[in-house]
Amino acid sequence: PPFQLSCRPLLSPAAPASVSVILCGVNRLVLKCEATGNPKPSIRWFKNGEHLHFGNRVGLLPDGSLQILAPGAADMGFYRCTASNSLGFVSLSSHVTQGGKPVIRASTSERVFLNTSSVMADVGSTVKVLLGANVTLRCQAEGVPKPKISWSFLHGKSEAIHHPVKNDSVLVSNASLRDEGHYVCRAANLHGQVTVMTHLLLLGMSLYFLLTGPGTHTLLSTEAGTTEMVNRGSTVLIGCFIQGHPTPRISWFQNGKPLSLLSDLTYQLLEGNQILQLSNVSSRTNGEVSCLAENEAGTLLQRVLLLIHGHQWSVDDTPPCSATCGNKGIRSARLRCLFNGTEVDRVMCHHVPQPSVEPLACNVRDCPPRWLLMPWSPCSRTCGGGVQSRRVTCHQVTADGLSVTLPAENCTSLGKRPTDLQPCNRMSCAEWTMSAWGQCNGQCVGLRQSTQHRQLFCQMKTGIPVPASHCSGLPRPPISRNCTTDACNLQWRVGSWTPCTATCGTSGFQTRRVECIHLRSGKAGREQLCSWKPRPANWQHCNTGHCETECRDTTIYCEKVQQLKLCQLPQFGVRCCESCKAT
Image (tube, rainbow, N blue to C red):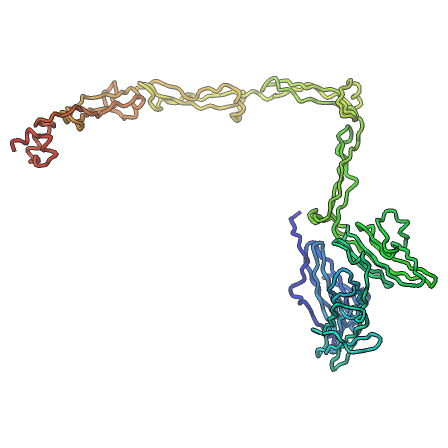
């Protein structure tokens, strides 16, 4: 298959980060959510922070967009689409209002914050935080014209807000019990007003919750039931803090079954059964965890829905054995990286501890008898038909890994005994075939000696030519030889040396004539025809003895020097001393 690059989801660049849609008697409303990515991202829609349920009027289009038929007042609110795959997620928000009346982006969920000192939540939800936390309650409202935001605080009675308000959000710093109560946001414009209320609860938490480290999730069970997505392999602490008189008895259940009946679940009860600790959570932990508080006054059930997600290693426990018998069979379990049950690239699990997988021996038993065939011997001839042989024995490998030779009768059930002789190299033998010698007109290599050549062919005895490699094992005939020819009947002939140009000193030299002469005709030929023998020198130094100091001529050209009146020049006056004295 073609190579595919994995990438995070991307929403269409044509879609803005936030879209306001005003309903004005339309019959159909479509909120776009066009996403791309590899793997292909899945699309989910939320309204006012809650997962959106589809019906006859509200549905999902094939491209991921949301369709609302006959939209009305009940459809006003904040919509958010989320595109996610194994590499991440991205979201886009849309605001839907009607006829200019304000609408507040509200959440109806219960929000519990136990692991952070700074909290931000939308108005409308029940917010539970630890004492001393910093809380920001947002009131995001839209309308035409833009509504004005105001806040009030209910703590037994309605009163003006005593906390600072910034960007329409209430800021509660270092929250204490006097900050506990209901915070009401009011959005108003000329078309009307709307109010949404948030209940802020302060918790004094157990040390088990306050001293948790990385990789630990802390949750509170509630009557309505909270939903939490936790990473596979992490530790989860679930609190069931229920007060009563007499002190209630607390029992824990998973998916309706008492924990005491679930032997494959790793858990521990702390703080008088008020805290359930689940270690190394996996898909086995998926589902509802509930706590039941009972006393003489009655019972109370609180719930938490755990959704386990993330990457994990999976061991393929049924790999094939590497051998069917003997003692070398190994079954090595294969590790696969899964994301929510789907296999992905192994590199995605690099941060997850890899389970140890030990190879196991398998199929340890005697092998059935079989014919053991040794390699064929070399052929007795390279061509023309030969014979080669091999050893054939009945053989068995035991469960201990021993190789045992058995009588041939033990292998008769396998069929006819394989042959131990066969013909080989039945093709005809090849041979070298030569052409006639060429003319004796090559380079001269001696007196009356030249070279001549011929061509060499490899062919079958039937005359069919074959590649030269078929004749490589045969002696190779020569393709050149010396021959006698009158064209090479030449030798060097030298003449007499000329007189020396000086009687003494270092400047004297003499020359002679050197020719390549045909011995029969006496005519000069090309010098390369005599190159089989070194060419004699045609120049040499002479009369190199030391010159005496008396005035005398030391060159045969002094008469010319005198005639040309060159005696005035020092180089001629010295060498022609005697001749130049008279001038």
